[in-house]
Length: 107
Image (cartoon, rainbow, N blue to C red):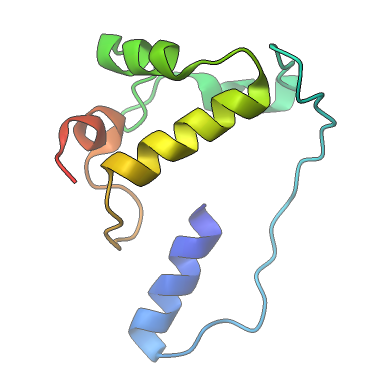
């Protein structure tokens, strides 16, 4: 997601989008009927609590549990639908509210 905000930031400052954006992609074959996913050890640090991503906050955990469905694909669709239906896009670089702030902010 950082690459998109960097591209928009570039456009905002010089009125040009970059010719290309380089990103590292992670390939993992996931069976859409599976209910669990093994996280590669190199990515586990991204699942830890941080100042802007309070993954152990009770509101975040409760919402995540309520959006969990019987398959990974259905869970992803549920999360997408929740964000699409309850949040509005606001451009800014980096973070402003953190996970809990975004969750509790209207729109």
